[in-house]
Amino acid sequence: MDSLTRTDVVRRTTGPETTNGSRWEVQLSATPPPEWLEFFKQSGGPPASSAAAPRPQRVTFDRASIVFKSDEDHVEQWIQAIDRWIAWAEARYAVSLDEASRQRSMRLDDEARQRERIQQLNDRFKNL
Image 1 (tube, rainbow, N blue to C red):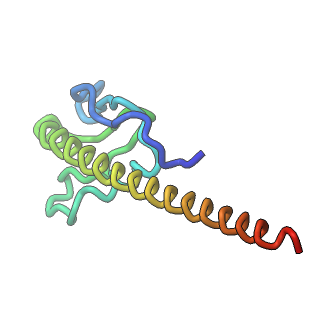
Image 2 (cartoon, one colour; image 1 turned 180 degrees about the horizontal axis):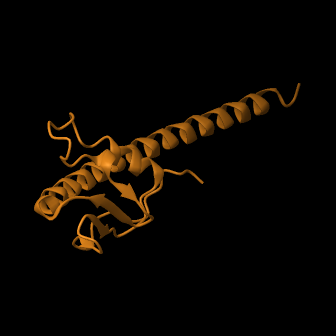
């Protein structure tokens, strides 16, 4: 089975929760597939000027959750950024699925044409 198949839309389903005031976790609606995670990691744009600024490379995924480190003053900034990154990754992933589907369809059409051509050749020369 092709790994680029759509199962569930990935979105944030909870607000941030912490057990120590610096490590935060949000739940997602589904476990993102590897291709989606690649798009997420690319979603941040140019490096931010601040070393503490939210960056997609600074989050970690644990199945259907995202973990990030932040002091309480920047949690809202992180959540806004995470929501943007999720939306961007979702959009890019959807485009990649559409492209994969289009490529698969073209390949199947080509294979069907080839089978039809072979059948025509076999029919043409079957009485020789």
